[in-house]
Every structure is written in C-alpha cells, then in structure tokens.
Image 1 (cartoon, helix red, strand yellow):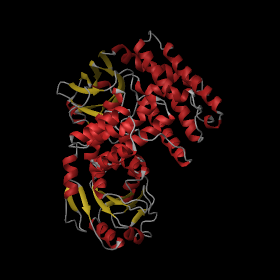
Image 2 (cartoon, rainbow, N blue to C red):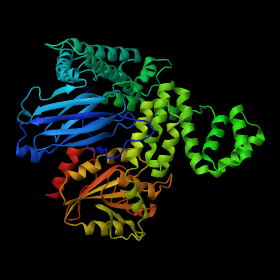
Image 3 (cartoon, one colour):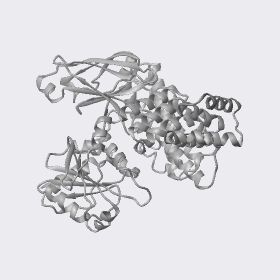
Image 4 (cartoon, helix red, strand yellow):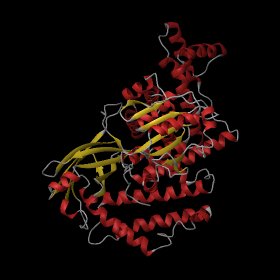
Length: 561
C-alpha cells in the first residue's frame, strides 16, 4: 500500500480558529522555491499543505501557502498528534510527504528541476534527517518488494482465500520485508525517527490487511486476537495516512459486528442511573433546590427507587430534545464497550458524531460535540472531533440563508452563488422537462441521490471538485429521491448541500413525482447518474459516478461534442 496519502479531490480549507476545549500545537512550515521564474509563478502561485484527521478519512485538513515573488513561503498548520504526516502539493507539478512535529520545518526545492531531479525536496528543522532520508527508504522498499513478488506485487492475488492463520502469517511476513528495507538503504545510517515512522506504517498496513481479510470473508475476529488488541495503536503517534486507513477499516468492521449482534438479539448494558441523573442535572434547568438535592442524592447512591425513577423521567421531559441526543450517543457507546477494549471503544465513541454528522443540524452538532468532549478519554480523539465539528459548522450563515429562503418556484432560484433551488408540486416529468429545457445548449450531469444513502454521500464527496474541472457549458442537476422508510428533513439536506459545496440545480422529488419519472430516468435509484446532451437527449442513463473522475469527464466531453 502507498505510504503517501494522495490529496483528496474534495479538500476542506482550514479557515477557522482553533481555540476550542484543548490547545493544539502548530507546525511552522517555511521555505523557498529556487529559480522561480515569472511564468512558473503565474502558473503555480500557491503550495498546498495537508494533514489527516483520525476520525474522518475522506477529508484532509488543508492550508494554502502563497508564494512570494522571491519564491519564499510560510504557513502555520495545527497538528493534534506529537508527529503527523504532512503532504505538500505544488499545484500538481510536484509533491512529497514529510513528518511534522511541533516546531519549524524549512523546505527548499528547485523550480528548474521539478520534472528532472531525483531528489527534489530538501528539509531543515524538526525531523529534518528523517524527512531527507524518506525518499531513500521508499527506493529501498520498492527494491525489496520487487525482489519478493510473493510478498510484493502478487501478495493480494490469493490472500483472501487463505485460512486466518495463513493470512496472519503472510501479513506479518510482508511487514517484515517492508521493515527490512530500512536497514538496506544505501549510503546512510537510518535515522531513529525514520525507523519509527516506517515501522509504524508497516505494522498499520499489516493490521489493515487483516481487517480487510476478515471483512472480505465476513468472519468475526476471535476474542483476544492481537488484531483486536493492537488497535490501541490508533491513539499513538505518528498519525499517518496508513493509520487513518486502518482506523477506517476497523470502524467498518465494528459497525458490521454491532449490527450483527443487534440483529441476533444480543443485549448491551442499560444506561446507568448515575449517568442518567448526571445528564439531567447538567442539562435541565433551572432546577429548584429540592430537585437539585434529590438529583445529587441519586447520583451519590448510584441507584434509584421507583418513585425516584418517575422523578427522573419527569425532569427528562423538560429537555428531551437535547437529552435524546445524548441518550442515543450513550447507547452506541455501551455497545462499543461491550465488544471492544477501552481504546478501541474510545475511538468509536469519538467517531460517533463524524459518522452521523449528516443527521444533525449544525446547532445540534455543537451541542452533541460539547457533551461528547466530556466522555472521550483520549485528548487526541477529543481534539480531532472538535476540529471536525468546527469545520462542519463554519458555513452556518449560508446554511441558515438557504434554509430560510421561501417562495421557490419551478424556475430555479439562485439562493446562494451557484446554488439553485427549484420547487414544484406538479408532475415529475413536466418538472424535469421544464428544468432541462431551461438548460438546452448545455451538457447536463444528472445526479440521483439520497442523504441517507451511504453510497450517495461517498460519491458526492467528489462532486465539487469534478464540477470545478469542467467547463461552464456543463451543469449539474441534483435530484434528491424520497424513500419509503423514513422522511428526510429538507433542512438537513440543504445543510448537506452547502457543507459539501454541491453547486448546481437542486430538485427535491416527492414519491408521486418519483414514480412518474421511473421510465424517463431508469434506473431511478440513489447513487445513479445520467448525462444529457446539449440537444436535450440522453447520452447515457448509466453514467459514471463523480468519484470516477477521469471516466466521467471523458463521458461528459463526448456528450458535448
């Protein structure tokens, strides 16, 4: 697996202040592009620096460093772990991975040698030796894996068919080969920081391979297996792309296991009286002196009589909307502690809100984050959660404006710049025909989605970047499909649209309109896509998803010719 985390197509710009519940450290990155010509400066005036968040693998935390005319740059990037991988991207012309820590790093590279230099980037400052040696390690690793194709290029060919013990042995052997490359670097003695960095990546890859194995084969990992106990690594440094990938696969495994346990009737412990009374005391107000005294007595005893339970229930009703949020979180947390050890459960508890952000208004995101901060043990996980929520609510003003807009018509209204909303109670075919007729002369990309559909959300992470790469004569038409299972709040959908920069024309279909469009838009399922030619006819009703960037750009270009 690659050790460099490719820049995601949809990046999140870090334009908020970090003065939350826990202080963050900062990495100062400065340097110079040597021999920066005027032409290169005009083509590439910024350098992008990105880092990961352990709780949200699909996003990078990103800052842009403007180049000065002399080629110098300087930027401050907050970091939450003692050591973190940082990714430099120079406008797609050059890039590298390096290890950052609290302090200052200086990076120098030659603008004349972007495509020719064997070693382009030179580092000074914190972790300088490790960062300068890292390319040599990658070269040695490539040689080791090429020399042993069974553990290299052909490793995954029959990996999934092995027995669990064989899979564990094969994964360990691959990690050993990768670690051996450290000592086989040419003309240098490996820096201890580099060794720790590389070994961490290799062990994380070993564990991820095993989680992939158990997920692919739909097998439960035996209790006490080191694959489970070693997940405590998630709270350790350095934070790498491989670590985040491992965290994501463990979380996927945990979600499936909990669902299966629930379906089989397995029970978890009920909410403790002491915790429930504490939740009420801290969130229901104002309380009378008598109510406060009774609550404190129940909290101290940790048990409640029947009449006291009625007392708790009555107080609960005063702030049920807020307490319901906390109760659902605690229910999920009890399941986590039932099946996993403390660090794994702590990680899953911190991940609860990032995983479910789309379900909550930004106001409830802030409320729930404040509560969860008191329940998470790891400061790394707490800060990671706080960072995500602060990013999530930074668009609150635009979200409120879109949600408050009234008097929508079938003719799309530009509610925010490049965000168009259309509304109709008429027939589905008539509505869609009206919209597509308005945009005749443009190539249309139709995106059918539902906010509750995980595949839709995964695909749409790439929609903003895809749209930015297409010419102005292409328009995106988003059709939000209803479901029979649950009613979806249009306010939450609008919040999601703004937060994920889904610019284009938005239609919210009802069930009758959906049925009327069944033939015209077949397949009429979430996470399916279509392309219409400028003449209003379909080029294809089975177009690639936004995350198939090269494929969909080619298909849209062909439709427009």
